[in-house]
Amino acid sequence: MGALEKILYGGLVVLGFAALSIVFSVRASSWCVSERLPRIFCIMSRIVPEKLAITTPDKIEVTSNTFESPEYSIARGNGAQALVDGSLSNMAAPGNDKLDYTIVFSGPYNVRETRIHWRNFGISNNYVNDWSLEATSNGKEWRVIAKGGFPNEEITRIEDPFSAVALRLKAKAAKDWIGVYEIEFDREAVQ
Ligand SMILES: [Ca+2]
Image (cartoon, rainbow, N blue to C red; front, side, top):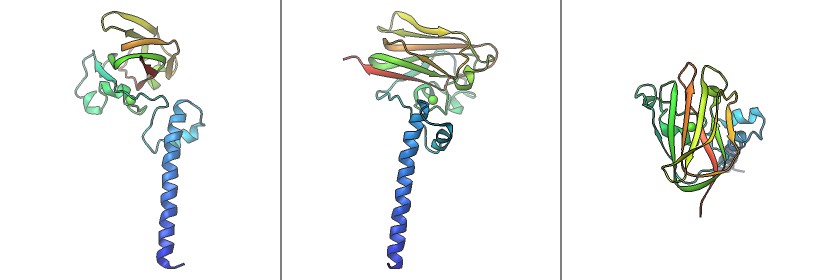
């Protein structure tokens, strides 16, 4: 084998490994959300941006009903849209001890399961100590889907199905400023 061929074969092997690593990392990061993999794989998978296991194909629009601090929220990438950007690494946080987001789907959806990723804000009682999730099917009448006090968990799962065109997530803290990393839905457009 000539020197040129060795370089070519070597290059192909390196490219092959790189491709396999990317595929594995993307799969691993979605499994991590479902907690199907040991933590070490989840740490490894942080090499690539996190993807959620539950896909949300249509765009979801989020607006904050609480004033978002230009300095402590917007400038730090903690604006409302970070609530549904598919990343558990960034949060929506207005720079306040309360938050209030309206989440608008592109039409009516049947939601099978909802997960609210509080992360650290759900496991210390300086943070979230009162929250609610409301839904509307017509944009006028709202009903409470779920609510609670101190979550005492990083992820709140709501397994009761419901239909909605929009949702409203509100939370208050006992003491400190709060945020929420992500809300994800296992959902299907109403035909
Ligand atoms: Ca996020």
